[in-house]
Image (cartoon, rainbow, N blue to C red; front, side, top):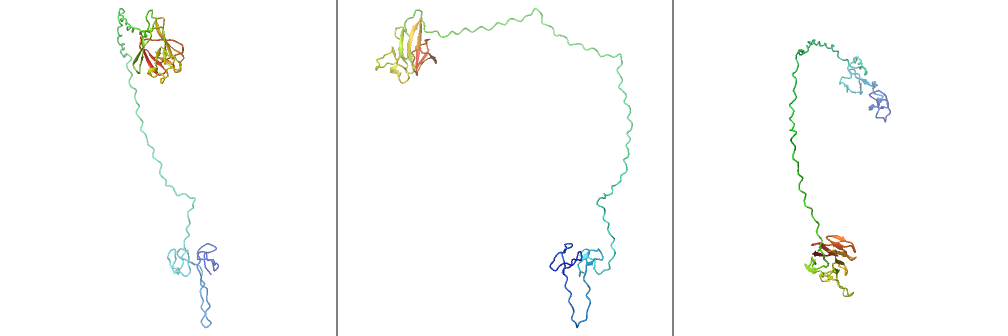
Length: 272
C-alpha cells in the first residue's frame, strides 16, 4: 500500500499522491511469510521517519536526511522552537539625538543715514531759453498756383460755314485702301447694289465684299445739316458704329475728320 512520507497516511493501491496532503506517495513492499522450516524473524514495522537534526520527515529506508544531510540513525536532539516574528510588528527605528539649536548672533542696529542739514537747498533749475519767435513783419511769400492746362477742345465736326454739299469729303475703305468720293449732294445712301431688286445706292460697297461683311442694301445715310456732316443707321441688321460706339437706328451722329465708321464688319474712315 502506498505510504505518504509527509503526513504518514496510508492511501489506496492505485493512488500516486496523498489524499490528505497531496504529497507524492512511496510504495511499500508487502510483508512475506517465511517457510515453516525457517526460524521466524521479526520485521520491524516501517513507519514515518523524522530527522533527529532538523525534524523534517524523511523517506523510510533512507540513511541520510534529504533536507539537512544528517544521519537518520543518530539520536535525536531537541530542536529549539523558532518563533517567527509577528508580521504586523514594524522593525525598530533608530533613535537620533535631537538637533542642536543654532544660535543666530544679534545683528548690530543699522543707524539711519544722516539727514541733510536744514539749511541746504538744491539750486533751482532754470528752464531752457525760449526760441525767439519770428519777427511779426515776416510773411511767407504767396505760392502761386501752377498754370492751368489749356482746355482740350473736342474734335470739331466736319462743318463749313454755309456748307450744303457732301463734297469734297470722302470715305476710304480701310481694308482695300480705296477712296470713295462723296457726291455733290446734301445726302447719300451707303449700301450695296442688288440687280435683282434693281436697287443701286449712292455709295456702292459691293465691289469690296460688302455682302460677305454684313453690309445691307440700304445700310446707312450720310447727309449735311446745319453745315455739319452727319450719319444715321437705316435700321440695318448688322448695325452701324462710329469710333466703336453704336448708332441707334434713325438717330444721327456728327462726323469729324478721321472718324472710323463700321458697317457690319466693314471698316471705313471719313475724311473731311
